[in-house]
Length: 218
Length: 214
Image (cartoon, rainbow over all chains, first blue to last red; front, top):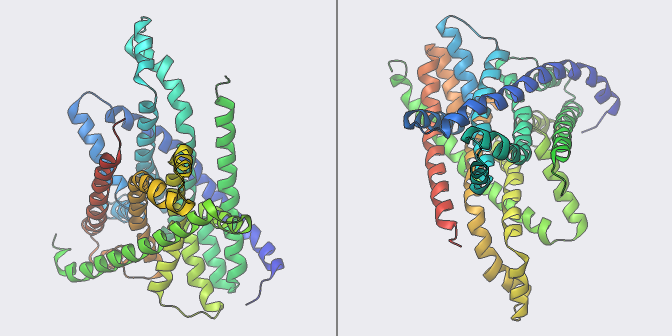
């Protein structure tokens, strides 16, 4: 067992090719999941029982099944239906469907964490219900959801590695190719791990900055 | 359904492997979580740093990458292990980090005043920990513990890519033969759903039981 740092450095450009694909997948996945969570949370908190039940059922199904199985379902299923999706698109859909449900739960917890007296105070001042929500509750809820959303984003970045199994040439896929070809497995997987740590660290840092920036000074 | 029936024995075998992996990995993750949480809370600095860096790596690196690393690297390191054992070790170690956070957070959630109250009536530290703090911490830990267990069950699906015949792997094999991905992966998803949904109901029950009326 030996470790060749020179080789590790030479593997970086090849891994970097995969990095572009990882980023191209992770970024839309995070943004779309955050967006998809909005209609879901509206349905979850709706007064209409049928709508609420449908949203709850959706959340339970996608949260209680592995995202890998969802990817296979969409990837292989679309092929049989006659409009084969690329691994990239199938992976993106699965990531958004699953993490949108998690985002919705995060939003709901954030909204419920704002004391209902806040909304009542708004109503007492003569705000319409939606205005009370938008002006009083939402800004406070948004601040509360940033840390859990950041955690979810990190999980999404890590889960983009799963599309390597439906042959999308992202970071992990490239690393495997290299490992198969060169047998320098320690160097390659060490470099790969560093790539992911750097990515997730950078993302957490940005979210942390947003959190600090939005904090209410007292 | 026609695609599914002849494959039922194979699928059942996969389910057994998934259950086995889930139980063993959860047990390992729980043990590691307890040990590392104890170190983080009570041990001396250098030990804490070691645990801290382990948590850091796990938080930043995908489970799939760790599984691949184990799968590719161990033979080169001259270590011979059964793939099942390797899978359990990696999944257990990965979710052990999540469990560490669960237990650590639960102990920290117990107000400091509880420690002080114990000390005020002359209890020794281990006593306070066992009789005052842990009983309260375990209530807090219940729901997040079960959530992490659900993550473990879902996480075991990744062993399919290193060739372990769990229910996801078997599903892929059956799809290659039958070309019926909706039925087969639907059935596979249903297996996970039954396990995880039951767990999440249990989690909600525990959460309700554990919440105090102030």
